[in-house]
Length: 277
Image (cartoon, rainbow, N blue to C red; front, side, top):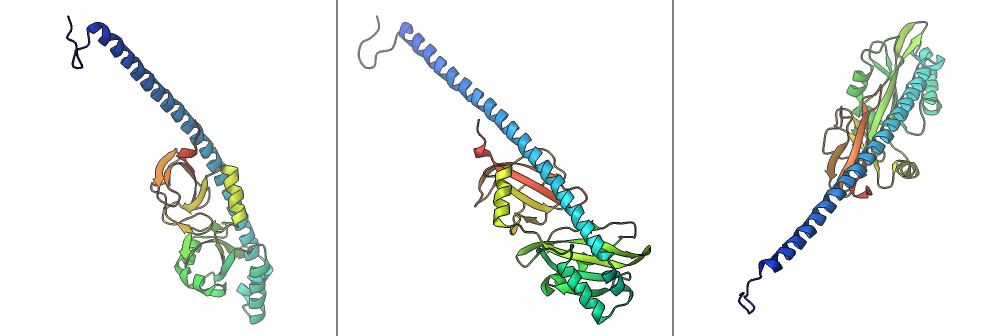
């Protein structure tokens, strides 16, 4: 007979149902957790595929924009105004070139400076922000190095000058098959707040769009320089998982893609917490 009292031991007939009930509760909890994790992994997989698709489309769109910039720069470089100045520099021709660079198709509202370099590599004309021009001397020389009469032009890597991210398009100036020099146009990498909001809405609420160098050394949110992602993006076409520090904060799911014919990478990231199961 079992002992009575508060310290009395439970009989096996009482213990067994309690043990089974406890095991059933544990099994339900474990199964629910496994099911949630499976659904969560599936949702993250779908989100990763969507972010990857959006990133791919953005990379192609940026490639098209870069190609259009190269075309516009080449058209300006081959114009009679520019080739005329490179052939016979004069104050009058200089003023005409400056006017073309500020109002022509190669400029646009984002242009900050421009350089005209002769075939010997000497800068023969500059216009625009003098601080930018002083900062990009070496970069411009590197950009035009190797450009020939058979090249349409090239897009440069991103650089930080003061608190802005800039980049260049460059093209050879050709007249009658002869290389006369090079035109280099520097632009701010920026977008209006409305354009950034629209882009964010297209790629998803809470998503962030970044552009950077393939070398992972300069990144921008299309407004200002920002910290590089905490993992290497260049050459990685898979789904990335990492945590951002404040103010964005938290775990992120992201994909990066190289922009064809440029030294750029586009990155789209999305808060993992916003992925719904």
